[in-house]
Amino acid sequence: MAAEPRFARFAAIDWSGAVAERPAGLAIAVAEPGSAAPVLIDRRWSRGELRDWIAARAADAEPMLIGIDLSFALPFVDMGAYLPGLEPPPRDACALWALVERMAAGAPHLGLGTMLDHAGIASHFRQTGRCGTAFPPGRGRLRRTEAALVPKGLAPSSVFNLVGPAQVGKSSLTGMRMLHALTGHGAGRVAIWPFDPLPPVGPVIVEIYTAVALQAAGRPRGRKLRDAQSLDAALAILGSAPHAPLHRYDDHRTDAILTAAWLRTVADDAALWHPRAMTPHIAATEGWTFGVA
Image (spheres, rainbow, N blue to C red):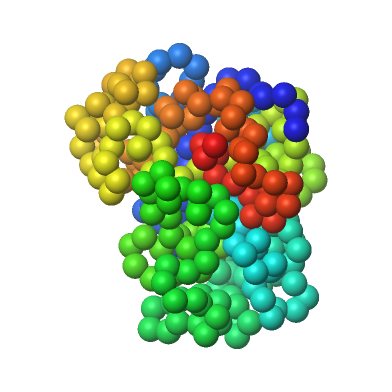
């Protein structure tokens, strides 16, 4: 890997897999160097617009660290495959993103369409009203980075679980369509860690888990930020000034603001760019959550 980069701006994106053109759960906040509070770019985003916003940062070679709250891959290491039985099998994350794009092609707004109805796909997922035969008992399969969060007092969900408020599967699968688009060549090409080597210039995308930032800011597990006072108290722990008042407070906006501030504090921590448990094989197939040393 290249030497640890020094970024000039820091963005956190709370992603959503909701079936809508402009899901309420999409939010982005940007932090500048120093201690000023991150600023929420307050608009009703579509997934395609956020993809294009990131591509524009790449076109300008902007030195920005961009964290996105979704799982960048499915579990692979535990079974030697993402979706055992599916042929031909994708062998790394880029091939997985291409598979998701092919199977969801034509679905608007980076949605999934009928992808999850495909027999070779559906058998691996727990969905509302049905549980695939390949979904194991319990919480489901976890990636190595997700398993590493459990001893830290966090409770990551399996990407294969599509049921309940903690499910992350649809967000992650729609996000893979975005990642696939951003791996294309040209002005919009952007490095995605740890699948790509860290470039000397330009933006870098990393996977984030907002619960890590909340924990670093002193919030107990499961305690979201839903008011101005709680958000400012958490920001202060991260060395940030109070935020500009929002017209509405919800988990998506506050998570984006707090996590952008957290990224600013940890971006130059060499240990986070070189996790001890992340082997080259894990990096290529499952990726890693930034902030999990």
